[in-house]
Image (cartoon, rainbow, N blue to C red; front, top):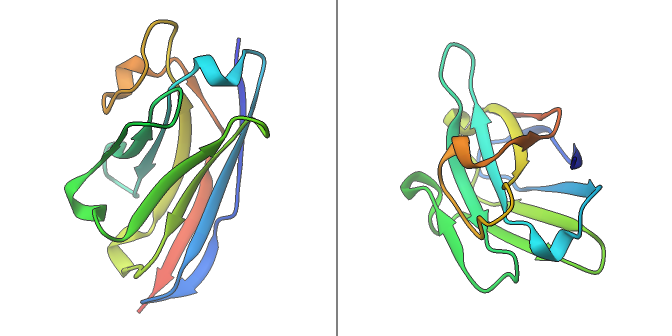
Amino acid sequence: QVQLVESGGGLVQTGGSLRLSCVASGRTFSNTGMGWFRQAPGKEREFVAAISRGGMNRYYADFVKGRFTVSRDNGKNTVYLKMDSLKPNDTAVYYCGATGLGVSISAKAHDYPYWGQGTQVTISS
């Protein structure tokens, strides 16, 4: 089992920045791929960013490239999502996920059997 706790959400204006954090426990963190997904009201959960177990590889959704940066600190069992140039349509609940064993990195939600509770991000226009 893997437990995930997100933090860092909030309300910011268009163009602002936030940094989300997700602390993991229950499995050796350096053996676990991590990802960020989001879900806006009335929409399906969508992929945002992912980082491989060792941090060498990163995937991003097209709509966040150049604005969001995913990183991890294996010494702190934490993955981060730095979000810059935020837009109103970035408003959503953001979830971090941990991949199953054997998956180093993935953009597919079904590769993530473990999820945090989510953190609300609201961007005002």
